[in-house]
Length: 478
Image: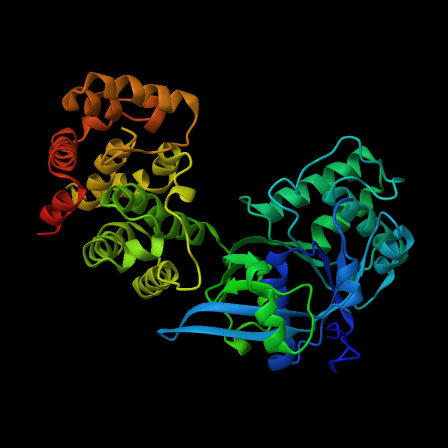
């Protein structure tokens, strides 16, 4: 069977307007898909040049397929389980700067170039003191980008209109700000022109972003049937969920240049990303953290099975809508839409997400994802959120390490595991709860200072331990 490429499938060639650091599954199922949509629906007319950011890995397959690949999107869409696929055609070529450094730097002279997109993992936006301007190439992604921007600055003699819009997708807070800071540090360390630093600051736009889409990657176990269905061989097939969200913090001109709204894409342009980051952490990540101990002690192993259970599904829905969302400062309609999207993602029949796989470091996750909702709820309502407090009791029970006689393989740092091991050896629930709630190392606050917190958690934990999770949760919901 023939390999997917442009001789097999006729596709349009686009001018190279986007430089992309990273060729992995996420960018291809996320940013490249949206570029494809904007090209086909809004005449964005923008091709992508992919740069291999690290020496390891290969871009040969991408070039062998002329940048083409098939994307499968699987999940709940318009209320129905949907699987659909398309050939993404926005990538024009890929360059290995370790082997073809001159080709890499030549991109700096392209007057059509307007955007830089990256996803080089959380460790990608780092400062490497060993990087030098004359390296071929620099070790770090920011080092490579600095060298290319300096070449562009020199070639176009600092022309303001040749500045770029830089949109990193790495999963760190203030990714754009951090990238800009490192580039300016390299400019200083490499003794580059002061005018270059001014050009970077004034004529280049660094956007902070929030990205969200589950991308499962290459469907190795299903590839034979997929190949038969497609009628061609594609070594770059990638699978992702239907849901996606891209929040881009930047000036109004970024929104004007990216025609995402015309295509109906779920891209939010804002001058303040923080409320959207908090929304994701509190609702999506918080719901995961709340669900793990309750679902697992209930006897269920997977996210989808948990949410499909009548009692747990009702509990989690009410927790999100009644106790988490009301603590957030975004329009109610936006919060409700996001919450419903989260619940649909949990029900995705194409994904099998193990509860134990997201139980890592549950104490620190509860502190950052759930506790802020509890404290804000108390502040706004002057009462305790009963469902969220039940989840804390469930978490304490989870760290007993036992599910109906079956050992739970707890995965946390040694200090946390040793603490709960000591507490549960006492077999005194009142002592266990008090010690846990007063553990400043866990929460940075003594939770027993809040009226009713200790008493409510005690009642919940006693019910879970003495009656079992099913009965305890049924009683809570009644």
